[in-house]
Image 1 (cartoon, rainbow, N blue to C red):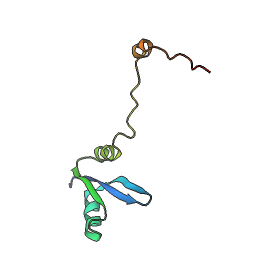
Image 2: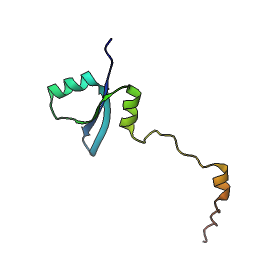
Image 3: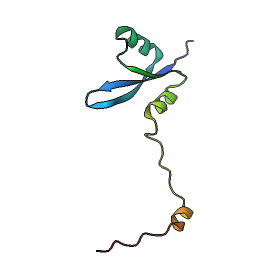
Image 4: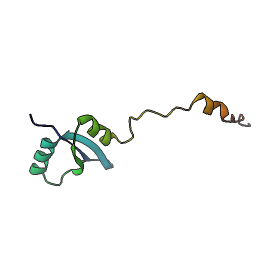
Length: 84
């Protein structure tokens, strides 16, 4: 059985100079590069799982927000109300 490998690449998007990251199977990337070489920028290839590729493509977007503990919250001095 053939093992699937994944690719993360950057897609040019009109109105967004940074483009956006996308994920596809290695074979799909190979076909896109054959059809239109250099159209997209490869970020990383040979990724073992789709989940790992998606996480790399997202970067920190979608990561859980770090919550402050009760101790950290209580230890912080409260801000006085703003003067009018």
